[in-house]
Figure 1 (cartoon, rainbow, N blue to C red):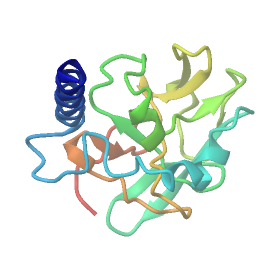
Figure 2: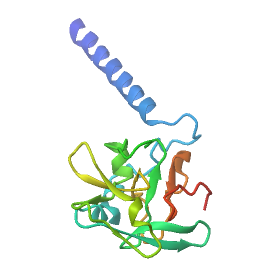
Figure 3: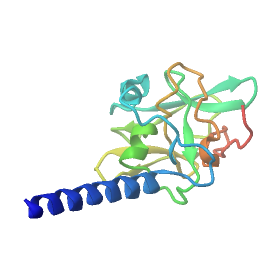
Length: 178
């Protein structure tokens, strides 16, 4: 029986250590909140957002929408706002797993991405993700949705943890807050 109690204590301590390690890996000490490094769209509700449908592979297209506070910004053909992630320093995405749940990538099944009026088609590109899918880039920035943006024009992801920004037609992050 002593061995069983020691075994249970060891398992309990190991479980607590794993939980603490996991919490530390997901938190952002500088943000002052407990939403994690990707915002708070890591719940099951986030995976049910319309952005999941928008990331389904097919031909992608980009357009411009006007936001009263942020100016002209990049959206997909359904009007869903697109973001860049500043840790992506090349065309290669660094947002996977839990990050990609909160920030689904804009995917396409063709390199022929349509540029709407006012966009520079030469800035459009694609990059292969580690899972073999193809993500759309603009001005060498991989593009993402925010899972908590539920309606066209929503900009709930703007400025999350000072690393997620809507994209202007020049392909730069708009670093002002809405």
